[in-house]
Length: 455
Image (cartoon, rainbow, N blue to C red; front, side):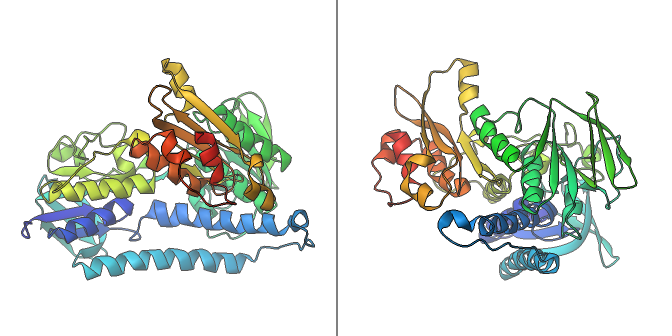
């Protein structure tokens, strides 16, 4: 290990702090510059709060449906102050864990902003008012992203909101229009519906979750409709107005949604402005930094990881990219090595029911003319789903008919985000359906549907 090597990381989110920790373990001298919160703004100010609120909303839904399990119903009500304290406690706990870990490894953390001065130097403007230059052998850009805002709207943080304006919650809206039906949009629709808001979801395509398996989308749409969520399919929001009672969202097909609040959930934008990228010669594409399989930009010693790399905007992917950067900076992997395959990354959507998928999608395979075998098993055929009083959804496994190799899969139902790990491991390790089928799984368990689908 080269203890003299210096790595400067701009941005301390999942990619940045994972890279810092892994590089420090390999003897690299690491400095992180973070302007907001160590652990990542998108992660700790977006992802963690939303999932905490979704978990609370799910507990409310479960409590309010106890009669189906032979219990007397007890109506649950949200305590906004307690929920806010819970969100802040989790956020602070996770951020503090990162601080403690990096401090124990000798990583220097600076609160401030940074800008490239050259390919081997970074200008730091610290929060304490000092400004200085850091020299580096390698530099990692991992500055994350922020919510995308269309040019026809100016969020006011009161009635017209970005996703980040929604937590900690000041109040739960009586009614809300969600603009955007991708992952974030459907999660917010689910979340607000769980807390009793009347929700309208503006869906620009003919199904929610465009690009996902139509069968998966259909289950979620049915769930939304059964809970009173209005779906404006084939509509795009083109204008928004404040009214005496809230907001009016105007769609391109003439439909109008009048609600007390509106939330824009139409994706994110990379935080790559004012970093000195152009001056130093780092190429960008739409604000993102194109990278190779080592997460290197067009300048060999300048890396990019996380949302700014334009790859999958997932914390798990960002963390793995960070670890790969650390390996490269420290001289390359010392043992068996597998390059990141973004097509094999598992992802989940925390709606009710949960949705998760990994690897090759059925529609994608058919579109390319690839021969596949698709097996599907509903959770209604498993004892544990009936015991849980929730038999919604299914397990679908996609495999190669010639070799039996698992190519992908999707799960809709309770604990889908956990169950997909089995299929993800099979996809990553090139396992066969027989490897899943012949595993002796627990009974009763939802995972039995995986073995049944593999049979």
